[in-house]
Length: 517
Image (cartoon, rainbow, N blue to C red):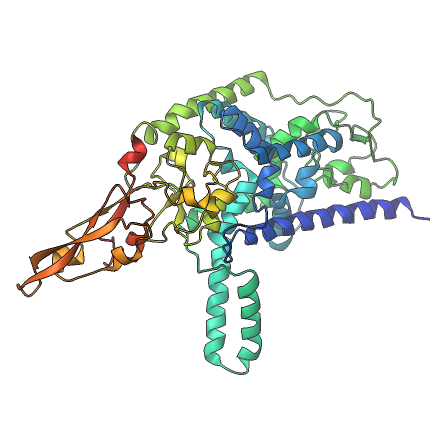
């Protein structure tokens, strides 16, 4: 007959398996956000964001058009009402990543109690973010743990992994046999499974790495510091979990033992005597049940009738958080919508309404990860503080491929609409302009047909006029001078990407005046 200890251990192992499974699923879907020769992605690569109630809440508060996929998050809300804040302990890939980093990087040590003192902070942050949402300021993606982890993988770790494998493979290839007997099969296997379609380079890698490193470094202070003190998604689940059916018994620390408070990675006990258990903080890790010295004191049941511990956030602090969220709207917009967008701030196809785009984008990085040419890059200051980490097209790094609409397929909130390919090909991103002071035919008197050859629209938006000019030798020659038809140009940036002029291209895509009208 199975003992209670064996039963408890089985549940602990099941929780660990669940963490590993969902983290592996997150990474798998991350890798599937990749062009593999198909116009349509077979996998729901934005699945985790569809189940994110924080994204749905902000989306509803800023009165954005409803996206059917986001309603799936209500399933996790319903499960939380039954099981409690299980998502954070059983599902969340960020929590699993932090647990893994703690095991690998830090020695086990007792908590300092900092996270327990700061745990109200995540609720205040959540209130401030949601208070700004009705004013069309959607900043939840900057702090959402799923977005934070995805951005870090897309901008830093995945490109670094690809670069490291490519360099290692090239080094071993140059060394020749017998190294290539092993290196080449391994390289080909990685190339066909996990390596990117092309080498990836993103802007803001150091800022992204520093932000992620700070979240990991906080584990040195206390276990799950991010989850306990800062995570707004955890705060939202905590508010729901207060009313969950599944509860811990006893509902307070035993008077003759305080081990649970030391064992619990979330320190899910309210201050005072007796220290009462907080459903809003418990991640259902079951460590207290497994390591109880008495063996059968701790249980989780749906039959508890004991009063619930209050979640006292403080009236003044809540009002201050609401005021901070509202006040942040005009302050952050002083550098964004208070003026016209930067002339080179070219947004993805279908996202040319700047105000609507900023109110819906959650900065998850899905579009940048899936971009076929690596042209979508994160924004720093070009759209003001409100636009941090939103995507923009930088044609010099990669153009908007004429036969690709993948970014619209992966966007979980519809900030980049999923346009049929035929409609996307006609979408106006911007307009190309020729800098005659840099263009080879204008400055050197020599033919250059590159931009016209690569223009994908039909009829072509770039044509030529023949005219006599002086070349570098002072001779009068007849050359073809390129001109742009603004009525035909879609601003895809292919011409700017392939322009042979060094440095800034001689033809550049600007935010179209037609977009602003």
